[in-house]
Amino acid sequence: MEASSGPPPPRVLIVGAGVAGLGAAQRLLSGSLRRRRRRPFSDVLLLEASGRAGGRIRSGKLRDKVVEIGAHWIHGPSRENPVFQLASEHGLLDEDAMSQENQQVEAGGHPVGPSESYSSQGHVLNSDIMNSMGLLFFTLLEESRKFLHADKVPVPSVGEYIKDTIVQRMKEWADDDKTKSLKLAILNMYFKWECCVSGTHSMDLVGLGPFGEYVMLPGLDCTFPNGYEGLTDCIMSTLPKGTVLFNKPVKTVHWGSSYLEESTGRFFGVQVECEDGEKFLADHVIITVPLGFLKEHQNTFFSPPLPSQKMAAIRKLGFGTNNKIFLEFEQPFWKPDCEFVEVVWLDESPLAEPPSDLKVAWFQKIAGFIVLHPPERYGHILCGFIAGKESEFMETLTDTEIFTTLTQVFRRATGNPHLTPRSILRSKWHSEPYTKGSYSYVSVDSCGDDIDILSQPLPEEACNSKLPEVLFAGEATHRTFYSTTHGALLSGWREANRLIHIYDKSESLHAML
Image (cartoon, rainbow, N blue to C red; front, side, top):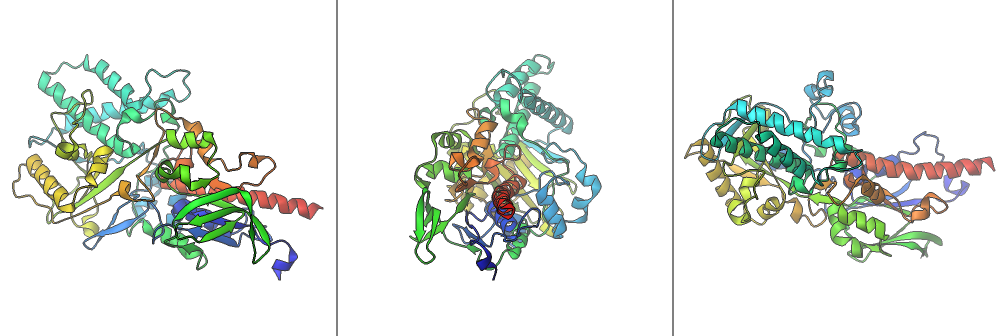
């Protein structure tokens, strides 16, 4: 038997069965990158706190229609995107998404398409002024990326840079005061969209210097016709039965010591203690929990505590909440080719303080609604996006309260007093105990180096003489693809590859002796 030809295979625990954890497990269990390993990693176990796999990939149903509670798009569906490649290989995408033409579109990371825009006073807004303000905002947003390698930045945040530039551009506007106010209100709506994209309460929290480090892949963002969970289902199907233990929340990761397993006489450097008291021993543990969870539990989750530099990185990096609100209608009030429905609140400006009373004005933070296409698949559903403190406040409300409020918003905006949605579904990511938000961003207090610090294994001298015991994966650990599903998957592969390379190297040395 192979077990008699050498030492037992290394034992690896993975905490979290999101796409980073699943990707790491799949790569370890499939063997070496070079496919020459004599002994693949056969002793791999995932501990998942919830009762399902996928993490922030979560598909749900609004009545009988599949919608995405979590990850929505494949951002940059092209050859360089591993999520797109996996989805293509498993036949999870439609023909349009897989076309070469679609893969070559440079969308800049933002959804594109015709929109219908209403003012909060019930007027349809002119598309020319909407498009001109959109062009201005996204031009300034792109300009914000140029400070990546600058010795000095003019202001700390992306939000401040764009607002300061708007003030300068306003001097060139020859409009009357009413039109100027409308332009500012439209620009404020675009700020809200970008808050959702960046997963932050305010663009004033997003660091200007490192903003350009995020990499946008080519391709027109696409969706999974039958749900994003199809991707995690495919990965799960390749794992041996029993690889994932569900409803196993971890309490403490003990590392940097030596633990005897009496049944085998083996010593392990890691002991993972679960909330139910069960303990698991391993040579290595890959931590894939969200940054929001680490922010809340880093002081108790590791024993001994993390090094101060890593704790500081966790504290400084940004992690915010972006929620969705789905509304189904009997009939659409938008045109067949409409991709977005937007409401511009005329009393708002990016140069003024936002409403402070969340109870009264939380819904004004909704950036807009995307139309789910095609109607043959979804019927008539709008998906609204809302980020930040208002998003977290929304989670405290009942479905009925949200339904009533948004019904009033749509009636006011469209001028149709009879307009009423049929049903509602919303996400509550900040309330999720093992997530505590949506995804990461690089804040004004942090930089890309903090992402690298977070991703480095422990002990810190592991790169030299000692083997790594605690490894870190997840979207927040990928320096250029943070906040994305492909960043999460790549990070899981990265940590699996780290272990594979270590043991491949060790086996090669033994073979030479």
